[in-house]
Length: 383
Image (cartoon, rainbow, N blue to C red; front, side, top):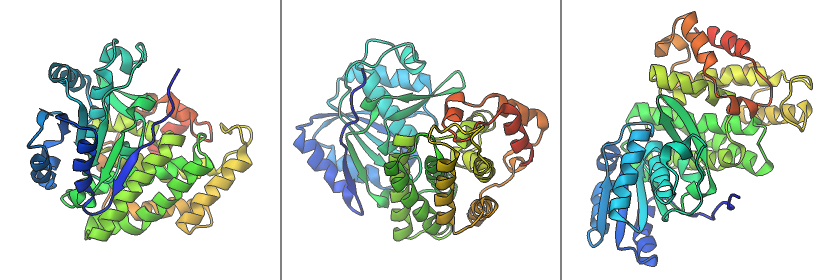
C-alpha cells in the first residue's frame, strides 16, 4: 500500500538559497550526501555559497554522473551512500541530479536491488532520508514530482512512488542565470510541453489544469526572452513555469508526445524538451478530432473538447490548426527545430523504428487513442 504524498516545504525567489541553512539547522543535520551536477554547480555560483554553508558538516559528494540517470550511476550512488550513512540528501542541478538524488536516497533504504525496483520486480517499502533539491535549470519540474527517470540498457523507465517527492524545494532563480542558451531552450520547452499535455491528459483534474494553465501562460510570455535576452524577471518566470509544470504532471502525468519523444532522445540524442515539442502541435490537432468512438477519457469526448478549448484560449486561437501554428511560432522564436531532419532523423525507416518504441503507458493517458500507424504518419509529416 502506497503512502500519501508528502507536504513539501517550498522556498522561492531571489536569495531563497539562504533557507538551506535553516533547513539543516532545524533538522540538526551533521552529515550530508550531496548530488551535484558539476558544471552547473560551479557555473551557477551555487558551489561557492553551498560549500561555505556545509563547511562545518561532513559532506559525501556524488559527482561525475552522465546526463539521464543510468543504472550504473544509480548503483554507484547507492554504494557510496550506504558506506557514508548521511542524514540528508541535497541535490543541485537539473533533472538528472534531482532524479538521481531521489533514486539513491530512497533505494538505499530498500532490501530489493535497484534494477528490480526500477523494472517493477521489487518493492519500495520504507522511507529514505529527507531530500532537499535546488534546481539550476527551469524545465523538468522534477522538484515537484514523485517520479524519477532511470535508464537500463538504453530503455527508459519512469518510477513512481510518493517517497520520491522532495521534502524541501529551494528555487533560487539566480542559479539559473548561467544556463547556456541550448539548455534554457530545451528545458523551457520541457516545462511548456508538460503543461500543454497535462491539460488534455486523461489524468487531468481541475487542480492540475490550474497549475498547467498558469505555466503555459508564463512560458508563452517569458520563454522567448529567457532564451534570446534573459533578464532576472524572465528567469524567475520560467522557474515558476517549470515548478508549476511539475505540480501539474505530478497529478495528471504526461501523454503521447512525451511517449514518442523517448526514442528520439535515447537513439538520436535529441534533447528531451525539443524531442517532445516536435510532435506537440500535430498531437494537438489529432486530439482535437476526438470522438466518442476513439476517446480514452472516461469523461467523454465533449469533456476532452472543452479542455482543448481551454488550451486554445491560452494560445489566443480559435482552432486547433491555429494552436499548432502558435506552438510552431514559439519554437521558431527561440531557435528550436521544427522538423525531424533538423535533429538528424530523415529516413522512413527511422520513423518506423521510433513509432515502434512508444511507451504504451503514456499512450493510455492520451485522450484520444492513437495507433502505431498514426504515429508513423504523424512523424513522416515532420520529415
